Length: 273
Image (cartoon, rainbow, N blue to C red; front, side, top):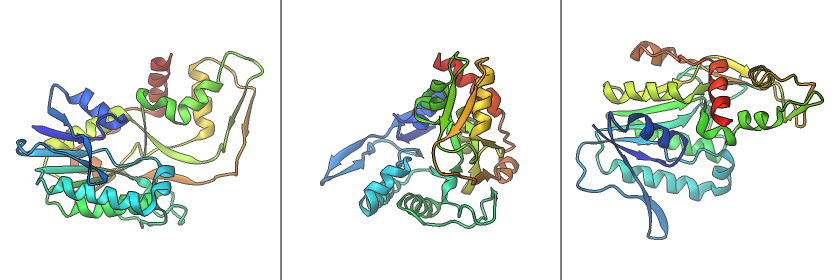
């Protein structure tokens, strides 16, 4: 099977190529600057290509900065990819498209969505295009983490603060938000199933378990065998809770999330030392 991968130098795209380089023929799909814009280029000689679209902008702040221009570019590039008639396309979306704090803590694929920002508009418009493909799959992922992105997330920030110092204080913006964290290995096992089996539609993908920032601090401190003297919040209190219901994916593909948050943290700490 030939799988074209956008965002092949990013966290998930690069992880996919590393995991499946011996199982699939993974081809990075590069962007080229043409007609005053960056667009993807697929070799016309490639036939029966499947597509993992992991190259859409994942940083909320950059999507907001790019605004309508970024949205239009993302949609145009996606349409260009689908014009090549891929056999299958999997688009990596986000659970942030759900209407957060709407009296719901756990979000299923049927939960209300909301295009309240350029980021969510970008994701939802791209989802709609992918779902128009007969073999189009949208994955609304929760917070994905692993050894390759520890420096860019809350795990790395906390890890840097927790040192062997009895007077240590850890400072984060808020202790209370609860999020669904999924280790990258479990994302890879899900993608393996999706490419090998017939599928289409929207699926949530996460651990189905909520973990607070305070719990992450405690787990990292425990794994490093260090005692934290004090934990402080520097920002506005955030009591939001975002957990995804993954029963649909579990039932359709006999998939399980095998890495607990404690096991995942242990793995990233070993690789960060």
